[in-house]
Picture: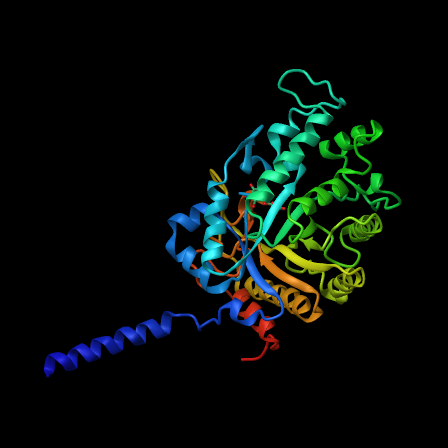
Length: 394
Ligand code: XIL
């Protein structure tokens, strides 16, 4: 009896310790996201080797996108050689957990290095090992047929093109009078311009890629994805150029289903302020298109705790975390209430795996869960936004 009694005491004290250290329970996002899928990008190495990562992913999310593994140079590692190991791992996991999958991305000028670095501005004559415009079209056709064909019926949304709208230069806005001034003059653009001059194609590379993708998987929803286009005016009116481009595509009968806002942000830089985000979403709705938030993260500038020999950064302050949470709340709430955002994805979910510290040294902690998979204020803010509750409700 004494043994049982002391056993009970020790179980109770374990529970008490657990209660005081465990954060409040969080309802899985996927159980709350009734009119809008809620998701994240996925890292295939973490998925295979880090069980808590896989568990939290399965628990919270109902849409996923491979971070890098469906990009051109990772699927087609060299001309005509394909590798789907990582993409298959993520798609299979998603299928097993009844998740929707986004494909990212078929045409992205920065993610096709072996092709970009060897392209020459010629119609059909390229030195050995180089590619002319005619080769580029054959490569694009084969790539879309192979990659989309493999995941036909499994990938519901594909980013057909990524980052094709010009950035404003200096204080100037993007000249939106024609497709030629709106589109970045990437090697894809230049190759298709040459092909058009020779009568091989009748349109630009964006229209061509959408039509090709539609011919491979007519049931797939095809998305144009970009950054700096979230607010109604976006970054120096880049949004106006994006909407002008989409209108031109629709006028040409191009099969586009929606627009993806990447939404890489820092707090205080929140496009929902002044209703600009909702106004932009409604503008696309009026064109008959759905919107997705495809890569949201809210980076925090971290304090330097040591400068030598290398800079070491400290933790975010409680105020930073609160401001970040409010920004997440505003974005998710606006999207949910808009009625025209089919999916909201963050670019990762744990600060353990995030591209921000690599891309923006000195910044980080951009995601809703910390490095130990504990929910941050941002996670509770997202939960409230998905429930339709005020952020100050208990
Ligand atoms: C990033 C990945 O997160 C990094 O791992 C990679 O090294 C570079 O690309 N916009 C996009 C994404 O559309 O594909 C980028 O992903 C982030 C910015």
